[in-house]
Image (cartoon, rainbow, N blue to C red; front, top):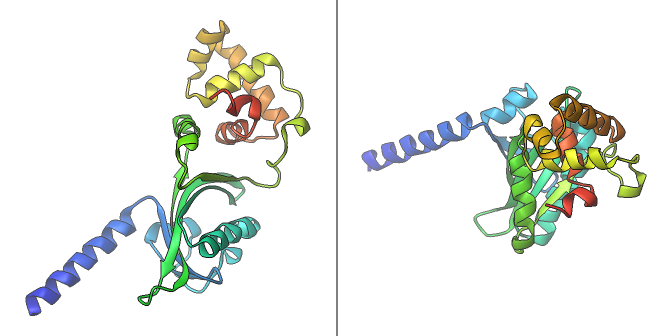
Length: 225
């Protein structure tokens, strides 16, 4: 019995170590959105020693807390796992997370909250492209996009993009480099940069990552993927 207890303790410690060293945010919340537990990476992101009992309104992304709470509520109300792309603002920087969330149950089988794992998405255009290519086939668990209010708009409210700007955005979203886009459109890399910078300004984006995410919201881009 002592050996069994030692084995269980060791294996549990190993699992905890794996969760604490992963670069993803792993967390448990109750029905009121209060954090029950999280891994070390989550603590590092929020620069806090203990998050238990806190809600998203208490953390660095408090401005986006209502959106995150809405996503959590959907998991609880619908009693099923879902995937979201969640946009938050941390220390003035807009960050995008791919979040998989599922109901958290008690031993009696009743829902007590949400368990989630969120990966920070860098400038990975291939990931966004893969998501959109998979969407028509992903019937059981669609990916939902949540963007900041400043990013949310319909196509008609965007400033007019030129044909070249749209083409540059399209190939950027497809994962091409500046040089490859130039070769595709017979433009110099400098000209491609100029078109993308102009599009970034028109779409009120502050980084290449934000530009890619916003471009994917445009039907004129999305429908061609």
